[in-house]
Image 1 (cartoon, rainbow, N blue to C red):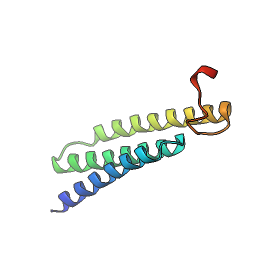
Image 2: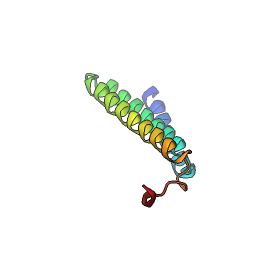
Image 3: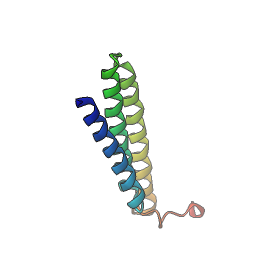
Image 4: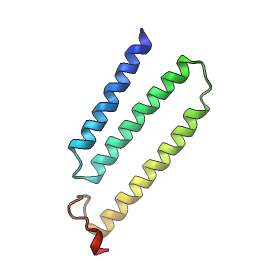
Length: 98
């Protein structure tokens, strides 16, 4: 019973992260934060599944390594965009001006 409540909570977290990603897509920082929230909910769901089936947690560590690399890549894109364009609006970002 406790596992189903947590899985329901993970689904709510995942879909609320997708909803924020769709609604607040004007700023790069908002989209990156919502993507990290989605990754966090997926990690929580993965952790619950590994506990449920009594598996080892090595795959969760690999998942965390890749999610940290994804976060660092997003922050580096954010920093380079702010340095070149002055803000993180997608409307001010023009591919032809590079």
